[in-house]
Structures are given as C-alpha cells and as structure tokens.
Image (cartoon, rainbow, N blue to C red; front, side):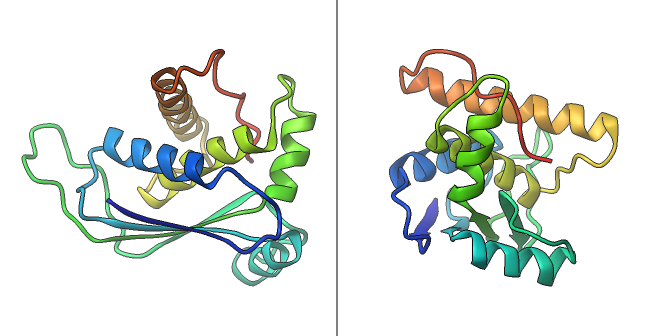
Length: 165
C-alpha cells in the first residue's frame, strides 16, 4: 500500500499514527495492496479555501476527501480487489483539536485525526452519511476500524465518538 502523509499545517501531528490507521483501514476494507492514497494535513486557512471551493460552505472543516479512481471494497467472494489511486484526504488539525476538546468524551487532537483519517478513507470508498441508514453503516464501520486499530496497538478505551458532520 502506498500512502503518503504530507504535513503542510505547521502543527505537529502524529504522522506515523495517521499512516498506520490509514493502512489498517484499507487492509480491513480489503483494498488492493498496490493502491495509492495521499493524506495532506493543512492549516485552517487552506482548509477553509478548499471548503468554499468544493462545498460552497464557509469556514474550515475537519476532513475532506477527493476520490480519484472511485475504488470500492470488493464484494465477498471476489478473489482480486481492483487496484488504483484512491485519492486524497485533507485533514485540519486546528479543527480536530477543537472537536476533540468539545466532544462528550474529550480526546486529543491526534485521536481525532485518527478518527478523521478513517472517516476520509470511508468517503473515498463510497460511504456517506447523508441518510440515517447510511450514517449508521458508515459510523459503525468507522468505530469498528478505529477500535480494531487501537486494540492492535495496545491503546485502551473505545474510539472517540464521531464528531464529524
């Protein structure tokens, strides 16, 4: 799996954890090991520009996903998943820090960035949360992936509650 993490935010983040949880999520979703993903960490001003440009919404957001080849998890029974360019995930640590502090179960900026990375991966794979049934599926899968990764890394406690909109 080729995953690049590029921190352009000026904020120190746990890039290794972002890389590790992205790799874990893609493996869990059975994405071809030769697929490619880019994760870019930006400051609030850059995220706000992207948010306005692509979503026509004001202010910075926590995570944005830009799919490329529109890869999807293979159906059960498929022997060979397709490979390709998954796309880009853009994270904003300033928003992640605020969300982590304001969450019912307060958690660190890095824990929020890990959750947002999985959220971004799921969006790249076609998952959404516009409808209640889609939201239940996506957020359930997101929690299972984060909890599985945390368990494998000996981190205690459940994953942070989803704070993404």
